Image (cartoon, rainbow, N blue to C red; front, side, top):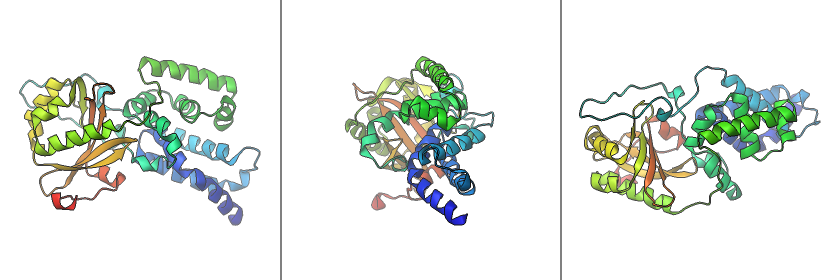
Length: 321
C-alpha cells in the first residue's frame, strides 16, 4: 500500500506548479494555495488505493485539489481589494482613516515563477492572475470560480471539467454562462496579450522617482484616473490629484526608501524598503495603461511577510542591491 501511495504521489507531483496556479486563482492567496496543494498531496497519498485509472491522473488530482479549495472557501469571508469595500477616500487635509483588516481579508500577490516555467503559458498567465480579475473571481460562488478557471484559463473541455467537479456537462455549461456574465459586468474578462517590455521601463522610472522622492516626477507617471491602494488598509485613492496629496502628506514617511525590482503575478513589481534600517515595507505592483504608458493602478502590499513570498532579503542597503 505504501509503495502504491508513493508511486501515485510521485506521478501527481508533476502537476504541483500548475496546481499552485489553479488554487491561487480560486483562493486569491499564495499561502492558501500552497497549503491547498500540500493538502491535495496528502489526500492523494491517503487515497491512492482509490485511484483506479478510470480517469487520468490529471483529472483525479485536480478533483482532489478542487475539493480542498471548496472546503477552504466555506468560510463566509471572501478575499478582496480595498476598492471592493467602499468608495475612495477624500483627502481634505485632516488625518486619513487608516483602518485595517486582517491579512486573510485581502487578495495577495504571488511570485511569478511559482506559477509556470513554460514560456508558452505567458500570455494566458499574464491576464488570468491580474489583481482585478482575481478580485472579480472572488465575487463568484466557489464552484463557478473553479469552472471559470478550468474552462477559460486552463482550456479544459466541458467533459473534463464535469469529470473533475463530479457533475454534468449541462451543469458546467450553466455555471460557466452565469460566471461569464458576472465577470463581463465587472469588466474582468480574460484577454490574451503579449508581454510588453515598456511595463518594466515604466516601473523602473517609478522606482527612480520614488527613491528620489520626486513627487512631480511621480505624478507625471500617473494616469488621471489612477487607483492607489495599500492593503491591509481599507483606504484607497482615485485620481492623480489625490495620490499627489497623499505623497505630499502622509506618504512623506516613505522619503528615503529604496527598492528592488521583482515580478509578481507575471508583472514587474518593486520590493520597497523603509529608510529606518532599510527594513521591508511591502511590494508595489503597478499596472501601466497600455497606450499612454502611464500607471493606471498602484497596489502596495504592506508588511514584511510579503517579502518571504518573493524571497527578498529582510534588509536592503544601497550597497547590497
